[in-house]
Image (cartoon, rainbow, N blue to C red; front, side, top):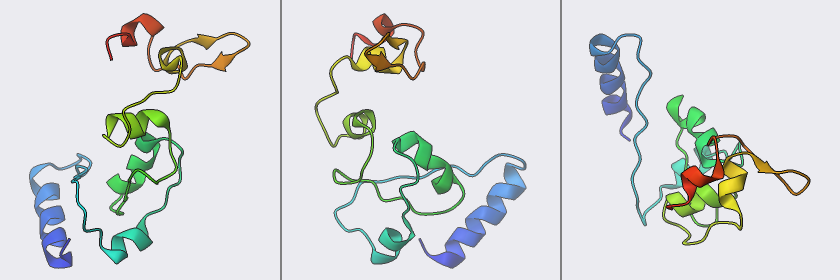
Length: 113
């Protein structure tokens, strides 16, 4: 993004939305700028975990080859598959087999995906 435009946007955002975090903007492209690739740091295995850095103003390039979780790949359109027992991974897990992340209260809440 053009630096002057970026600064103007930030000034106006702070004026009209004081105290509110900057939005995260994203887009799909086949033309990734070299400077954006250099600025990208995959600091978290999860796509969502990396968004904090983007919110802080850094570019984050995410594609089919970026290391990351299968959910981020699936829900950003880079994969059609989810790992086996994904609904348990997002919820309570399976004792002795799979640790759950506890994003959902139960695996049944994810069955329709």
